[in-house]
Image 1 (cartoon, one colour):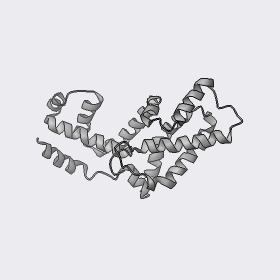
Image 2 (image 1 turned 120 degrees about the horizontal axis):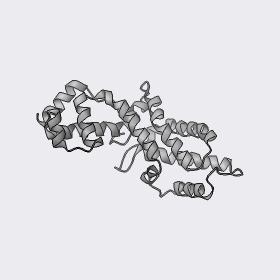
Image 3 (image 1 turned 30 degrees about the vertical axis):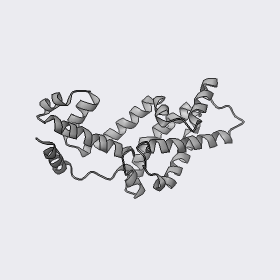
Image 4 (image 1 turned 90 degrees about the vertical axis):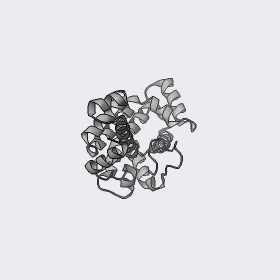
Length: 209
């Protein structure tokens, strides 16, 4: 099977790729907004936890964050490769956390003492890259990615998904996976790329999001 054959075959089996998540949410597509919140709420909650925000305040912070996202989603555009929805969301969450601490300035920041204060100052530094913040939230990022994978899996043929999973998740060589799945190495690489692109679309990190 050639690379072109792989594209054609998967197009027939999978149909057109659905609108990416952000476009769907902007257009008011049923279920898109709920899916976006379900994907990203655990990550925002983990940022709040790192900033020393008390657990009982998470609901209010999350409501503020996603209300702001809903009102400004149409303004988010991926202009540079480094522009991601996750980074944009982080900026909104950081601003809402700042607002929270201004309102509760007379109260303790939360458990954790100087360590919590240090994390808070680092996270509120405008020069902090979102990738640095993600490094503190491995579990939340794992949950985010797993939830996104669960959403998009049904859009792909079983062989396409197995090729992606074997190469990306299991770290196997494309040639070995191709032999097992009766595909060419090129077709395996195409399958991997297609799933990864769809994953980036679901997370709002792909061009045009």
